[in-house]
Length: 433
Image (cartoon, one colour):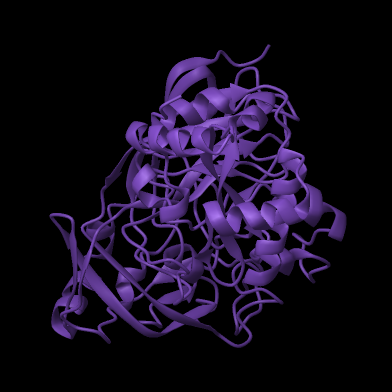
């Protein structure tokens, strides 16, 4: 008998770094149901923890009633509440002999060679995480230049060495890890290469979507990092065909996946398997350092199944203020003025709505190309028309280097109506037609 679908589900359990059809689900919600995910910092902590099998810890996935392969799920981000009091990040470098082909995934002790070894923590600093069996430092990454941030009142301020070391001594307290987390907080490194840097908190989800149809590391559920899995030398290797058809681009690192957005994710397995995690306190476009300020957080979402909407990758409806200028929704006065000009010229203009298509690939150029191709296929447009519409009614923005982009364009409502996307876009942007 299928598990009863809940109206509201609270999820506190995390994966060991792997997502896919064989991963235990956290439960089931009704179509239209709500989920509240409590998650741990996504990147650095799992990266330096040798027993975790992916580059992140994310929440165990949730099945959505009525979601079948070939549908899509609209995921509405209602609230993101940051729980951590501090965060640390920086530029990484892999540690020689501490992995087999991929330091995010195939971790091993550099001394005794044990795969995904259990660990113990001794003191603070970059050698604190040690193999439980032989005692050797066992983190597969080191931070070559980094910082520690105190998070207060929507601000983040980088601290000096003394304060960073004091925070490192209380890393678990400052990180506010959920009980089910198995990571070592990266705050134990005590990094302080930048002092007195001030920035704004603007939390968003680095991971939000549906599970792939093959079991893979959560950090690699995207076209850029996923390419590392093709014919890889470890047990989580995938084929070229699986790379092209199984992934869902749930690892977005797009800073507009924040309160007030809607992610429309493809369903690759029955129930979809909605999962979330890797909340960032802040991030600039491109995430050019490779990582940013990851935090524990409580995220509230609700979901709606969109039947028979077959997607090759996610769509995003960001908050209106996050759209590039040419893609922003038309106001009533603006649209009336456009209609007046067009009427005088004997032209009938088409109502449109802004939408973002996610493109991902090993490089930014290839990601943009894939996004254009996804748009042409979905909207049944010539490829050249997509290029023209993006140029004059949208933009291409970099979500993450090396290869995650957001492609914005204004799409005619007649096309969105055919796809069943007209109401969701008109309502989200309060369009004047």
